[in-house]
Length: 120
Image 1: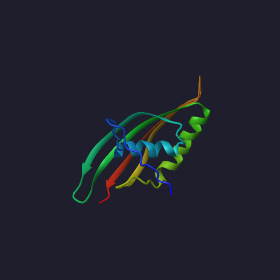
Image 2: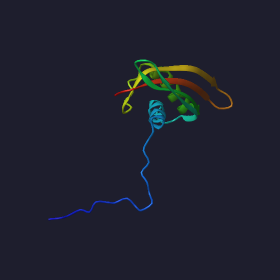
Image 3: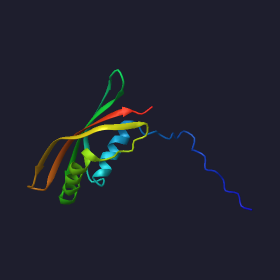
Image 4: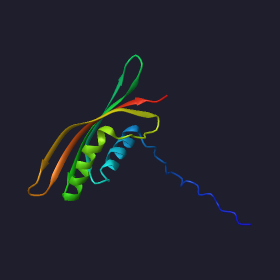
């Protein structure tokens, strides 16, 4: 019989938990095959009588032909994408702006907003 030891965390090291904002960034970037860079991300809490949640505004840049193509895929897929973010429902995902340049190198700036509802 063989017994495997369980690895224990190293003293002083902490495992960090991903925040909802971290998960939103990762989910949006995965739609673009990880080829974009988040330039700005803001998160604002909101509540109504029946719901509570957060509004996330992101600005992403895509540089180079392959990255710009991935940015175009993001723009096309984002509004209808079914996100899976733990304890959150994505009520709305909207592309609010797109800017593109071709010279000297292809570059695209994408701005989007996601409205999340807390899932009890």
